[in-house]
Picture 1 (cartoon, rainbow, N blue to C red):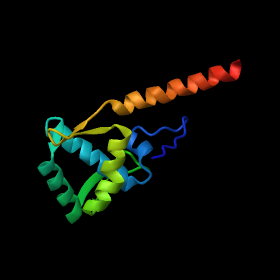
Picture 2: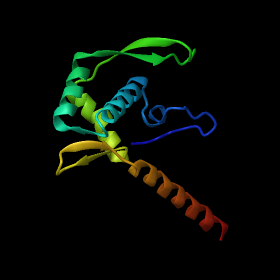
Picture 3: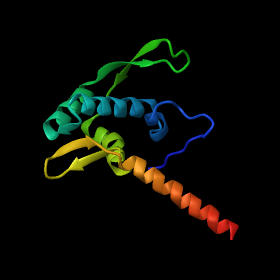
Length: 132
């Protein structure tokens, strides 16, 4: 997954940086909120119920980008395969969500932060090598 951002115009929501479309960002935010509401993890059954809700389509209220004081209603709909391919797999591969094979649960993770720190360290090493 590629993350492109403008350091001078960073959005306030991490999901707007990580995902390329508004619908993907909204869906990822919904998933993270669902995990938080469930005490920090989702089992396979809870995840399946969440995906089923997305498959049937759900209406959510989000802040309007042009006028942050206004809320607008957006319909979010993903098939099971689309959700796993476009939302859950990237979140897992970036380290935002972990899957525990033994407990069969999805949980939020700090590995994303650790990976970004490692990237920063790589860049500092590159800068040092240029000065030699």
